[in-house]
Length: 154
Image 1 (cartoon, rainbow, N blue to C red):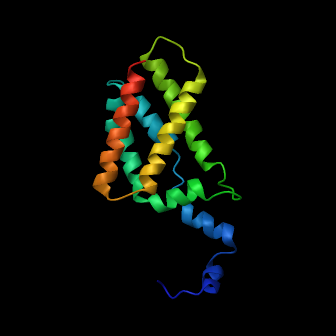
Image 2: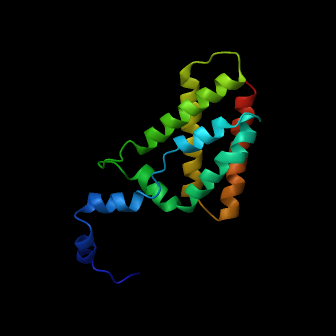
Image 3: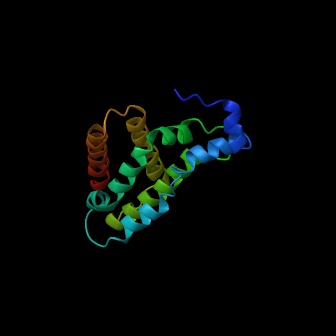
């Protein structure tokens, strides 16, 4: 445990909210860039595009898992209160794009919302119960396989 007085921390940070922002800002990743990069790939199934692009973004995010958990689970009352919902919304749009790309059938937007919510919660469960980098990568591959096999069956 570091022998740093709390008062010293506040000489660098105006208040708790500024301190909180400093802690979580490095993980407040805008997933749109990952989604756009994945969607720009012209070839491959949704799972192949994820393997090529999306998986790397998530691995980087899991390296900051403690900050991710703080941001997603403990941000109530801060300007980041909607962080989890924002991620789910971004993922929902990404899933809707993927569904339109691979299926001629039109689905109720609630399907994409449910899938986005489930995938996000799965990612957070990996972060919350993290055992090792290998374990996290293996779990992510399994979740992604289950997710994409289901989506690709539509």
